[in-house]
Image 1 (cartoon, rainbow, N blue to C red):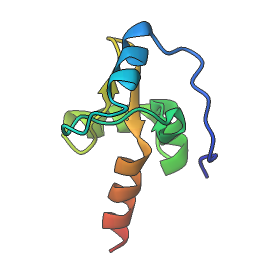
Image 2: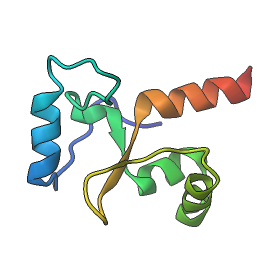
Image 3: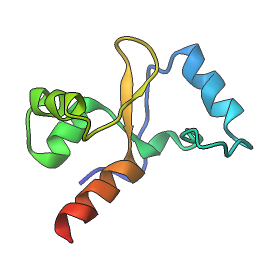
Length: 90
């Protein structure tokens, strides 16, 4: 299971700006205040027991929406992942 507190070691400056600008902003943008609520592609693949390629395929199919910090760095909101998991169990 995904640990409650996650540390992202490489967050670019643009991501820091997003996190700071979203503190009091609730305009439909994903709030990134809590860094522990984000999963990497690798973490999500391990959580679901699938390959990273399967996660990429789900993105192309539109089933997963990553938050992109730049061309190489992306994360998935844990709230979105939990919602997907709950919808599959229902």
